Length: 374
Image 1 (cartoon, rainbow, N blue to C red):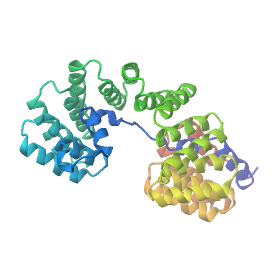
Image 2: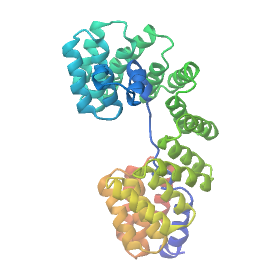
Image 3: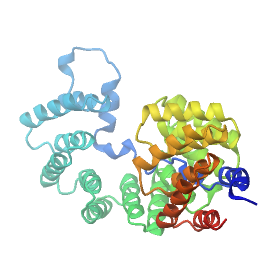
Image 4: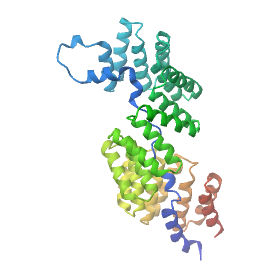
């Protein structure tokens, strides 16, 4: 059978066999909990609830905490600075201003504030833990781990510190230690949604999908607006072939966050697997609109166009995916298939050869080799 005669059958295998689609699902990675801001959680909750009485009676630190929890970071920093000017030994104000700086991405300034909080109160477990998070955000895992260990040493019942250390272990691919820390966090605080979520991630990565689904469900039960948990549970259902349940979860993620590009990518992928190409394209258009740098959205939309026979549009999308990430082998293979459909054999061969250079996926490499040997 000629190369061109075989192409339709091979395209179908590529689409339905998960050759590139599985690589193009979009999981959200680690999640932390707002419980890390333990020194101010109760005060902020009180401040957010309007209470009678003149505004002048409000505690300045409570006002600053309220601004922080409302997301007004610049105003929160100004308010914490005023508190510090009047109370230069207020370790909590330094810690909480550090949190605001960290949330703004000003990590060096955050670390300076955590340092000051720790100098004022060396036993301040939350400040050690928060500094660890800043160090981890900088990629300084050694310092982060030291701070997490210190926080746990100061407070062995500090669930958030176990969760954060577990995230650092996972980043270092020390998965057993990560799992042990997530388990301990859940044991200490069974109401901590991020601990279930991140343990679910470990289970999903290990292929233990039923356990992953259970943990994502536990996270959602504790935080019903946890969009990433809906998204990742949807991916687990999708991997099990339960596409209707997957789509329900992607719908739920998008109801929580209508600008959630990853959920559009994943719902588009599920609809593509169901043969609902127009709906898939609509979802992938939304994903690209919210995140024009999303390589997987272009790749998957290319697959949808190809499935409709629009190979020129497919090639344009695969080419855009390659332009965004020249090391991603999947779009090269898919573009090769589209080139073959248009009789552009030399360009197809070049793409299959590129797959062999880039890919370490045995299945994808074998298919590229099979195409070159036809």
